[in-house]
Picture 1 (cartoon, one colour):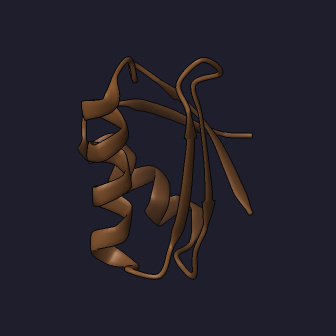
Picture 2 (cartoon, helix red, strand yellow; picture 1 turned 45 degrees about the vertical axis):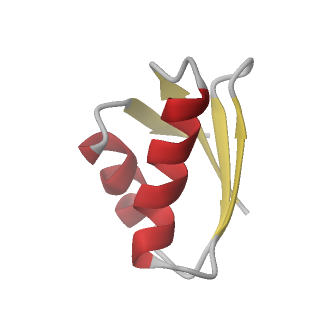
Length: 65
């Protein structure tokens, strides 16, 4: 499980944007988002760097935990 701190997520639209960005590259990915903690947990075959890039493309700041 990959864990990332993501800045700027505030609503359901943010959750969908991040989830869809990751699932577009790995449809089998398990994406769990905690808006309160600003945390994204991802189980995926994608490299952490790739996941971070996808989140950044949606306009959010991201750091691996």
